[in-house]
Length: 105
Ligand code: FES
Image (cartoon, rainbow, N blue to C red; front, side, top):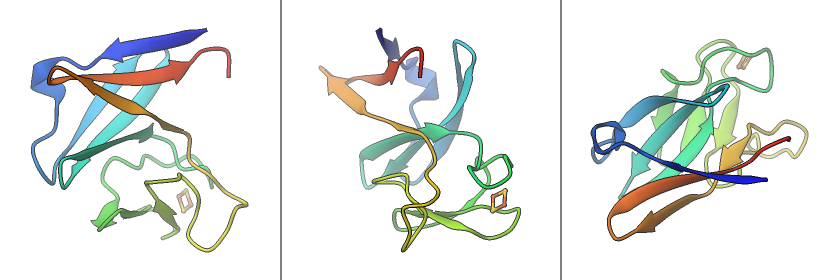
């Protein structure tokens, strides 16, 4: 089943920013990179550290725990397809943001 989560206006990150969201039983981080929005799980696929405060360079996010880097456009670890952080499409409809989650995954 698909859930479209309407992001509250106050939770929409400013340009270059990020916000933390709880959606159902998930903890997500929403990024605004050049007015493109990326939503991922706030859990590193390596050992589960929070990614919220990871270092961002372009669309690459570096986990603060052990330094692995992830491409926010795909969720995959850089130069690898072995590790992937769960990422979710973000839709914009009439200036309202929605995060699309497939439930039961
Ligand atoms: S928990 Fe993220 S790199 Fe190890």
